Length: 173
Image (tube, rainbow, N blue to C red; front, side, top):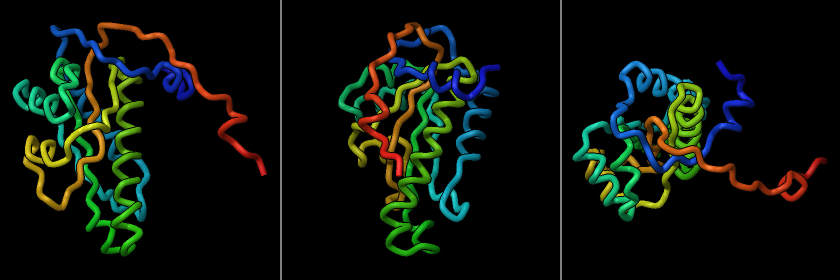
């Protein structure tokens, strides 16, 4: 098992998956458990996750995301939706406009790192038609799709992409 730092360094966007290797139910369950272990405002977990494994639905998600083909190729896709009203019950407008979005995003990030730790690859997708994604997963109107996360066994090992130096992004006070 890798330590956290190694896991983070091995996370890359994977856009090609082994077609003959489905994601085992146990691994998918473990990844979802880690997503739900993520911190959230007031521990409200103001989000809902759709685990999409059926090929027809994955193809529809691909179309909803401007035909990003890897979403259909990946054997699983997680759809993270914010639940603004759940957060608003406790935190009002700030919960509705920010905390629910943060909750869903943090859960997706935990899922992405859990996928790496489980030997899977993933790609985070934020460019999609919200209404089309909501229709594919039959989400109620109050849920807001925030991120799609393709999951599967990598059929590629992309080169690490350059990162900005810390000095450009961090200010010590």
